[in-house]
Image (cartoon, rainbow, N blue to C red; front, side, top):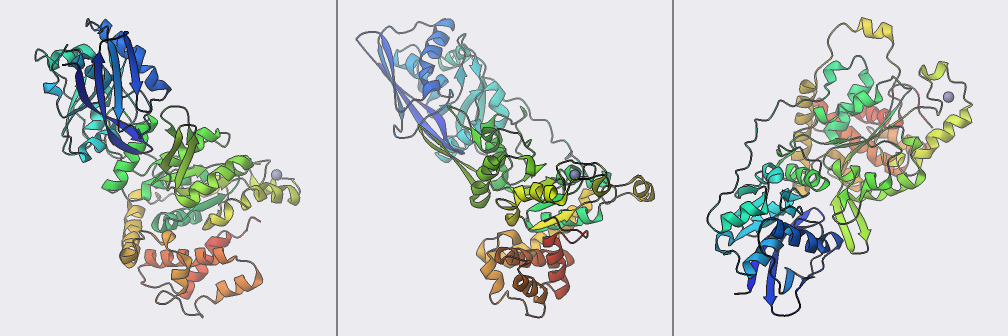
Length: 511
Ligand SMILES: [Zn+2]
């Protein structure tokens, strides 16, 4: 027989797809043809597969070989098809029986010497195979752990093409995936090591409970970064669906740790203000890498010194933040990655970034206004809360002898508030208050009595609050009520929400 068919898997965005690799060998000029929308990396597979087969001590069939990847209409990226192509060619040439690999998906890149190399995105590929009814996969050793995350699939690993061929011939064995060590206790920064900062801590708790975007203003040393990087520590763990999404994105980006455990903690991404557009939103040739925006999916995206970011960068962030997804257009079609992140931005009140804050800064007010004005248009209106932080002074640090509340305690309150909100919006499918559309909150049965929202109406009439800002205040008020265990916001909750919105919780509003 000079025809063989082997199973493999490919990626389209964050979703995997089962791919069939067919090889047909016929008499004619010796050549290897690849059909089925191969990209450049896949075209290079031709040379890798040939060298790997020869260097594994096998004969390269000197015949006219056609390799076809199905479904033909699906774009195929990357080098993960090498292993399946090599086996299809060898099986088609009658060098090995395909029976032992029947119904097994093979994923892996080949080195010229016949070693099997890891590829990105193995987790979503194995998940797709499982969904298509495939219960056995063979993957590179370095990807074996992440493949075992998918339930209902038997994972075996290979280090060389030689080992796989011997196994198919019935004379060799495959490798077991390395044992996954028990999960270490959740590490990471804790609110317990943060002295003072009552306003900042409170705003962080509200942001976590309602899923609200947060802006932190303050001079260097005020603890903006310390606060932001502690937000994940008070967010609930990811549910199964979210954990798979986040782990799959890390797998595609090639940043998943080798022990390949399912990621349960909400991710935290803090791209530098000078990061390239590709690093932020994603890019690259072949298998397009997700950027920081997508790696922060279901977690926190922290943009420090946000007025330093270029206008083009801020512009590029706007659409994904609104829609919750990144669409990357390439000559060979578009790739789409999810990007539903909670945003925390931070800024110094002034470009001189004077450490002592107001007292040492001699910049004219126009300079300060222009500096913060850079983020007002595209981003600031989408941010629910603004908080002004003051530098923590030595005297305060010494006076604060009582240990600060640890993240664990705050997380418990956040979880309770989130449960109340999720129960209230369950029939509509919203999980947190930040997801609730404004009109819903302004209509019965959720409309608040006019006397309780008087402060918002006044601000709206004065022009101090935009219509969008009005809705954001309502959402915040519901979160304040959820945290306090009230089933409806009171007038006090609405006032508090208004102050958080306007940055008045610490006295001064950045304009
Ligand atoms: Zn200044």
